Image 1: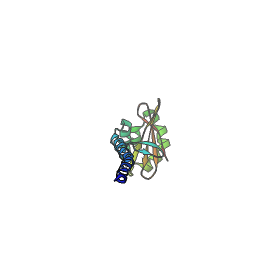
Image 2 (image 1 turned 180 degrees about the vertical axis):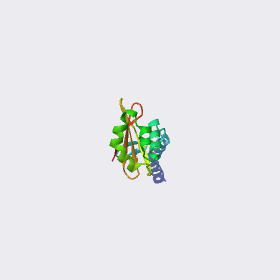
Image 3 (image 1 turned 60 degrees about the vertical axis):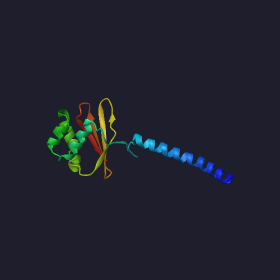
Image 4 (image 1 turned 90 degrees about the horizontal axis):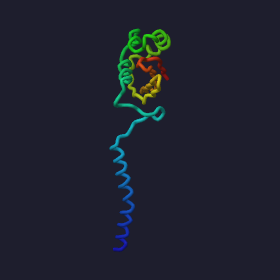
Length: 138
């Protein structure tokens, strides 16, 4: 009988950390988990900014001169067209799933990157007025 009570006490002490760990874990899950890309950082899935919604819209459209006129400032039309037209023509409309990464915001520009399912990373650079000024495709 004494042996049985010692076993019960031992079982109680061993099981307490397991129950407390599961409680902590479940309470952490209820707070929400932020998704992140191991290489690039936090993934944005909700509460997208106006610029992100602008990117979504632009990626659904066919590339044309009017595409550049819609998303690039008048001051930068010629240079942007010369620099990025062939890249844009090769990706638009973007027909692969993608997700947004957290924007990088500075005083003079905002960079927003997307990671495509095919592993490409496309970065869009906007000026303070929200006009597209540059992009990279890796």
